[in-house]
Image (cartoon, rainbow, N blue to C red; front, side, top):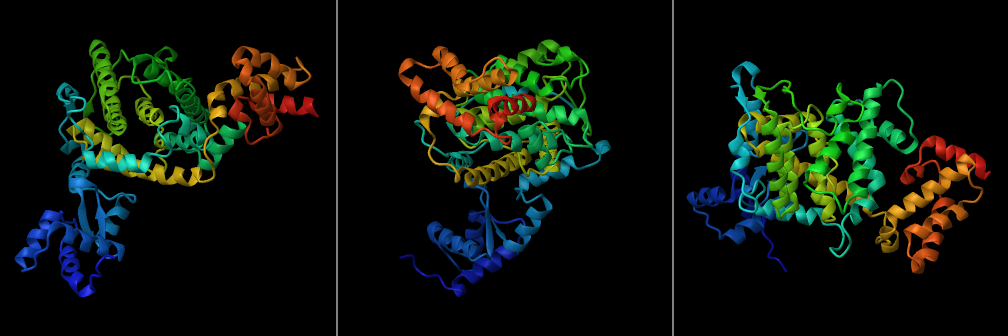
Length: 459
């Protein structure tokens, strides 16, 4: 049983911490207490600090060597001022420098040494303690399941969350509810521009691409170019620029950063970024690496940040980790974090935002997953075949090309499912059709009109 520590014993530590609103590192606390004639070994001091946190007297922020101990009032004020995110001293410095007027910031161009100096699995943007912490938060199912198993369990929710949150960071005014109506029922929200509606639908298509092609995607040229093509569809002034590296200069609004303008260099560094990312062993370091370097290069005429936000999820999908949805991330901190990379090659602010955002996503999807049991491995194995067969059966009956969905299913399953699994597959497919309603037909890549045509025919 842990030894009880009285409030009298804790009071000197609590009083000491109150004198520094920005917080203390544990080594600094040890030295300050020693100067007062109080000496504790490290483990004893950590127990006292943990008890103060449990009592709501202090806040422990950060992980590993970045851990800081703060008086609760100043910590709450600091987090409140930054959209709920506690920022390290280094992150605050980046934020302050980026917040100065443009006239006070030195114009800069792309710095090639920033990427050249990074050595996969030697250089670490995320310290080991942070990577371990994120792994503990993000691991959701056993490692024996196939890649993409976890994200498929929560796909319906993620399609809405990530499409909305990523679009919101681009100034899209769709609400979360309106996004859900658009994705689930194909209903564009009144008063929104076609551009905003297209942006949401493009996110849905891009997320589905990542999930459906999980065994083929990676940090390679086809994946990232196709991701851009899906996200930029019908949104660029030059349609031929969709899915292509840019050949023209671009600018960054409200920044003194000037991206590269030489097409050959853009192509060369684009490949360097992908090759480097692919060589990184840790999924969170991979995710954070592309969060930084894809927007910094600006390889496309537009839609660069959207590409990076979805590409961030590639290693998380592969490792069955909780996805990063960007829900609730403060827009100003996210943008300032990237500006810190662009103008200063400083990662501290965007790193604090990244860690907080991932923790937030994990908490959100932990609640979502509590509504599910363990995944049905048979359904997962034949997920794509189920989508194809059910969707096509509904379409054929809706068009009047067939009378019975069961006949269509049996015909299609012959080419998609081995004979020994076919009976069970058809049983599940028929159950899926019986359970089809206006709230889940999008799962089978059906358009609202196709679902309505089927409803009329079946009755």
